[in-house]
Image (cartoon, rainbow, N blue to C red; front, side, top):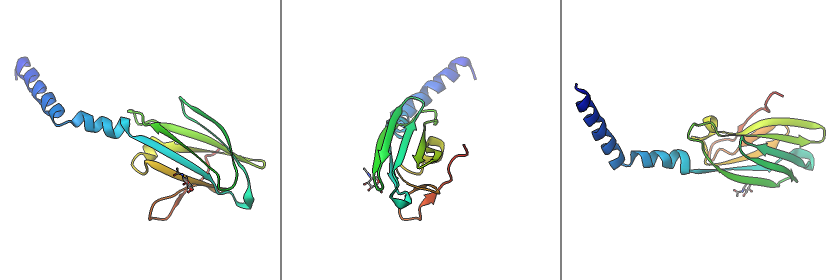
Amino acid sequence: MSLLTQKFLLLCVLTLLSAHDVFAAHSDSFIRRTQHVNVTNYLSDNLDLTLHCKSADDDLGVHLLHHGGNVRWGFGLSVFGETLFFCSFKWNDELHRFDIYRQDRDQDVCRSCNWYIMKSGPCRFNGDKSDLCFSWNNN
Ligand SMILES: *[C@@H]1O[C@H](CO)[C@@H](O)[C@H](O)[C@H]1NC(C)=O
């Protein structure tokens, strides 16, 4: 195939792709979709939870949640699939960490990710299925 033919074919393919809005659909699912995370204090013994979450770009600050209290935030996803929010969880003299949002783990699971925090670790509501509970990160 001559170089000119190759260039022509490439142009045809690109035209077809954009005509079918392939790029728009792509960017819609990977960039413009806003995700939400909602974290609720379900610690037993009516304990207060001190929560501090961050990503590479954002520090969401320190939140003191009474039992049943929650905090919720929204964010866009990275095109590179690497969006990460990590949190520390404190009550009494316990301190734990957990990656509350990991794009590689969560992007196909929830757009509105609804977590509740127990002493044993965080659990995610899973619609009609049973909730998924995780262990704390190793410190
Ligand atoms: C966050 O989760 C709590 C506990 O499930 C729920 O009561 C609350 O409505 C949720 N908030 C939003 C905005 O979804």
